[in-house]
Image 1 (cartoon, protein in one colour):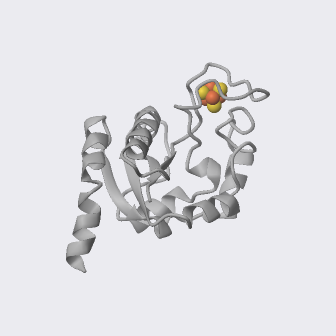
Image 2: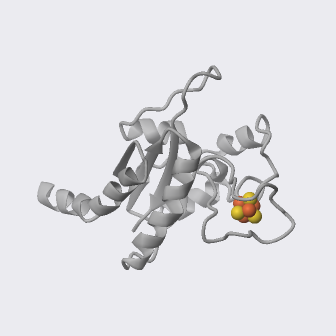
Length: 175
Ligand code: SF4
């Protein structure tokens, strides 16, 4: 059983290494069942975030926590990616998602961190200009990032001051 587990982690090791090579601070294979989806997360986007309703990758354009939970339940494994910058996460996620997909894992589906910043202004009345690159953030889809990350033994703290460095996460549902 332990051997099988190791083999399952090993077959995704190449993507963990690539994430690290692209600037991630950490990347690990996690059980998709540890991804926690909670209804309150969306309200934190709606009340208290200036980005609400401004980007196609943010609420109200993104799936609810309940919809995301149903999607997550279709998967066994995921790759959790940690970086000290939103942009690093958002560059890694679509690239790796594509590589994983092309390797034959056709269900690969990525979620980034924070609002999409690919366009200066997002035209929310039209289709996305860069659909191959823009991914919704974990939190925009109702994922409780804090609990998910801590459950998997990684660090994340509430940012209390402008000087404090944040922890940013993305996740790719694999298979
Ligand atoms: S790529 Fe541009 S159009 Fe698409 S979500 Fe991001 S900002 Fe909006």
